[in-house]
Structure formats: C-alpha cells, structure tokens
Length: 489
Image (cartoon, rainbow, N blue to C red; front, side, top):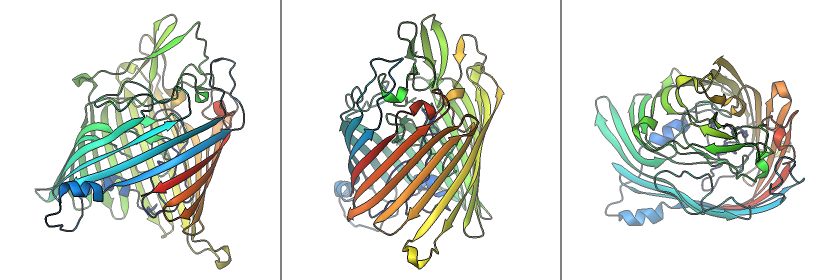
C-alpha cells in the first residue's frame, strides 16, 4: 500500500537537523522520506542515484588490516523515542484494538564496510524494541521474511561490490547481496521509488528494507546504465491487526474497508521463491546540458496489493505482476530555483490491477540571504503536485479490489519547508493534502543539538479528512506529540 513519503531520516556525523519536506503515509511504496539530510544538496537530485554506484574513494592504507577497517568504518545512530496520542482510537469495528495512548521505543542502527579500491563488503542493521503490543518478534530471516513484524534484531543489508572494472570507454561496478534499492529523482513524492520494501509499522516513521539483488552499473562520461535482477520478493511490514493505524479497516492496505471478523477474513498470499516471481530492472540516468534525467523500465512483482475473493468469507491479498516505466528530470533555474518532475506508467498482467499513469511536478526555492536580525542561515521551500489517470480498470475474474485506494499521488498537493537557524537549531513543517476529499496531514518538527552529535527532537502530527476511508482522515484520532533523544556516531 502506498504511503506518502515522510523522507527517510538518516543523519550523518555532525549533521544538524532542519526542516524537511515530507511524504506522508499510506501503506505501499513509494515510501515516505521522513526528513531530508540538511547537508545534502537539494539542487542535485541525481546524487541519490549516483551515491549507490560510486566507488569507494579512500587513500592508500598500506598493510592496513581488513578486519581493522570494519571497526574504523563503523557508524551508527541510537535513539530513544516516546509518543503520546491525544485521544483513544475508535474501536467500533475492532473492539480488541490497542487503546494505549503512550508508547516508547529504542533503536540502535549500525553500518560498516571493509575492502579496497577494487572491492567492498558492506553490512548494516539494527536492534530495536518497544512497548507496543504485537509489534516485535524474532530475529532477521536470511532470505525471505514472510511475516509482517518488526524484528528485535535485523540484518538489513549484507552485500559485496566489485568496482572500477575497465570496460571500453567507461567503468563497470557489480553489486550482489541484500541492499536498499533506490530509484526516482523527485524531492517529496517519487512515484518511481517503489522497489525496496518498507517498514510501515508507524506510517510517520518508516524505514527502508534491503532487497536481494544482482546489479551492474556501467558509467561513462555523464551517464550511468543500470541493470538489476531482484530474485526475492520482500513484503512490507505493516501495523499489526490490533493497531490503531488500521483505523477500523479490515486491512492497512485498503483504507475504509469495513472490519467484521465474523463475516470476513483477509489473508496474504506472499509470492514464493521461484523464477516466475523474479523482478527485472533497468535504468539510464545522466546529465545533458544541466538537465539531470533518468528512464527506468521494470517488470516483476508489484509494490501494491490487490484483493481476490477466495471464499464467501475469505479475501486473499495478492501481489500482481506488473510492467512499470518511470522517468524523471531536474534542473536548476536562475541559481535559486530547482525544477523537477517524474512520471510512472503501470500495466498489470492479466488485468489483476488497474493500468494507470501517475506523475508529479514541482520546484524548490532556497534563500540564504536572510536579514541579519533573524540570525538564521537559510530557508528552503518545496511544493509538488501529484496526479493520476486510470487507463484501464482492474477486470480479472475473481478479483474484487484494485490498489486504487492505496495509491498516493491521485490528486495531491505536498508542501515542505526547511528552516536552519544555526548549527544547533532547526525546524521542519510539512503538509500533504488530497484535494478532492479535503484530506490533510500536518507534520511539524524541531531539532536541537544538546551536545556534539547528541540531539533532542520534538515532533507533532495532525490528521484530518472528510471520511474514515481517506488517506489521512482515517487517522483523525491519531494526532500526537513525539519526543526523541538521538545520538550519532
């Protein structure tokens, strides 16, 4: 199911937090980025794609031990987070819903690598826990995790890379193993970035999951040609069956579908391992006369669930096979204006889902000449509009619901503001609006550096909408405040 993207929060050593534009939440990718990296260049969107394939640039280290590098290159993030909801959830359709309004959680993320200029082995993962019921269980599964729960310990990435292979006029990199897979170029909502599974346990605090892949990247001049095989379908992690985030829907992926456990049961059919469920991806990206671009075809498993009737009281959540074609561009105009756009065409095999076209267009403006009396460094404003056109409705026999209600970008306005006061204090305010149904989300956040690499983050989320089957209106009782202590090392 689709979730707006509240932009993926990854802060490196020495970063202070600013205001970020959000892509907020539904339940299938494109997944939300919660917060943008303040030190990243918002005017060079192709950097996110280039960073995946860049060779390891390091000085010659003589006889330095490879195991020593594992420790030397270790980085991490630890946080302790509390949240307080203002109201109890509506339990009309789900009497067993968790009615707790206060939750706490902790998480320790670690990342490291070892290697040389020619090859690299990398890994990342985390340990985590919290007071939420039915949310955590077990440890990481090596190949395919078929459950929809957070793991107490998760090996999220483990991969190898061979870099800098001379091949004609360019160089070839090869990546194999489990790694986060990125696509897309837009700032807030990227319809093409949907090929890494996502942890949606908390739709406002999502985490990308690694996917198994065999990938090649061939770079020459200002262009990169990518080809990838994704042999293992990895399901997203969704809120548990008694979570307040279901909001009286029978399933998180289908907002507004009434819940009646005596009349209806929903089961998930996770695609098995096998050649028929392989996914294939290609992409050409580069820069021509100041215009960044990419074009990416894909065939394989969909990012979205659909539903088919199995028995009168049993509905099966299926993952259809789809063909996608995504493309995007970005350029800088008049030094301060960045203009970008992105589109995706989706065709479902055997009409098991809708065939549709979705796109987003927007701009970013950054101003760093603020009056001296404000004592602030800069402010950045981003606005995007996303729309969708259904070309052919789902009509496969036995299928009863397409992914239409789970798809973001059907008629949405997204706005984000970043405001950096100084190296210690910054803010973010983000809104997402579904225009035709008065459906709205507001996220606000402030971050203060208590000491070097040690931060306190205060956040606020508000939801409103006409009906309980809208993206954000279903969460109207989930307004909350959050407080986080975070340490980066």
